[in-house]
Length: 411
Image (cartoon, rainbow, N blue to C red; front, side, top):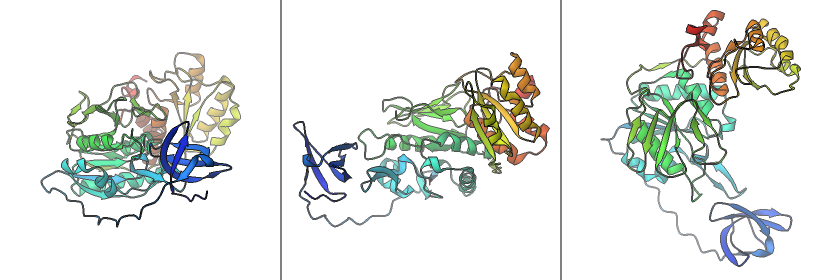
C-alpha cells in the first residue's frame, strides 16, 4: 500500500478502528496523527487508506463584524500554542494562526469587545529574546496611546513569564495588559485555548490595571487565574493549570463561562498609573543555577557580562570556593544578584559566614525575587541606570510587585 503525507487513513489495532492522518514512515512503521490529536506509531500493515471525497469548494471568508458599541481591545499575536494548529507534514504543532484567525475560531470574543489585531512577529516562545521584548513593549505602548482600552498578548507558555515580566518593568500601563497562552493546541479535545482566550478578553475589559498572565486556575473549566507578571512561574510541562503565583495568590480570577472578574485586594486597578514606556534593556546578562560540586571556573564564562543572576541554595549561598571568582566578576564591573532556588522565602546573606563573604564580594541580595524575574529586572535596571548606587537602589526597590518590600529600607 502506498500512502502519501496528509492522506486520511483508518488504523485497525487490537480490534479497534481509529481514523487519522498519515504523516510519514519510520522504517516498517507508519506515524499517524489520530483524530484525538495524538500521534501513534504502528506497523504500516495496520493502516488502510480511506476513500477521499472530492473536497467541497472552500466557503468565502467573510470579514469579521465588530460591534462599535463595545470597548476596543488590541490582540497582539506573537505565536505559541494558543495560536497553533497541527502541521500534518510533520505531525508537529506549529504556529500558523494570525490574530484574526483567533477571532474567527473563537466567535465568543466578538461579544466581549471590538478588536484591533496585529502580529509583530510569529515565533515559538523559546525563540523570544530581549529585542523582541522591547518591540513588544513599544507595540503595546502605541496601541494604548492610540485608544486601546486593554491589551491581549497571545504567547507561547514556555517563556511567557520572562516576556510578561519584561513588559511589566518596561511599561507603566493605565489599562490591563493580559498575556495568555494555551497548554494544548486547538485540535486537541482537551484544548484550553478557547477558554483562556475568552477569559483574557474579559480581564482586558475589566478594572484590572497591570500586566498579568491569564491561564487555567485548575484542571476544571471553571476559572482562570490572573497572575501578577513578576510573581508567576510555569510549574508543570503539560497540565492546563501549569502556571502558579509564587509566594502569593493570584491578583485576580475570571469565572467561566459567565466571565466575572474579581480583582484581589492588592491588585493594581485601571487608571491608577499614567502610560509610560522605558524599554531600554541591557541584554548582556546571564542566569546561573549553583549546584553542589560546581567547578568555580564556570563563573569565568560570564567574564565581560554586564550582569549575572545566581540562583543559590537556601538563603542564597554557593560553595566557598566560588566566592573569589564572584569577587573577580564584581571587581571587573559585573553586577551580581543573589536569588534562591527555593519557591518561597527571601534571600538573606547576613546569617551564615558564606553569605557574609558573598556580600563582601559585592553580591546584591535579591530578596524574594524569582531568579527568572531577577534576570529580566537586571536587564532593565542596567539599561536605565549607570551609577552603582542607582543600580543597587533599583534592584532592591519593589518596582512591580517582584519583591515583598523595598529591601533598601532594611539594609
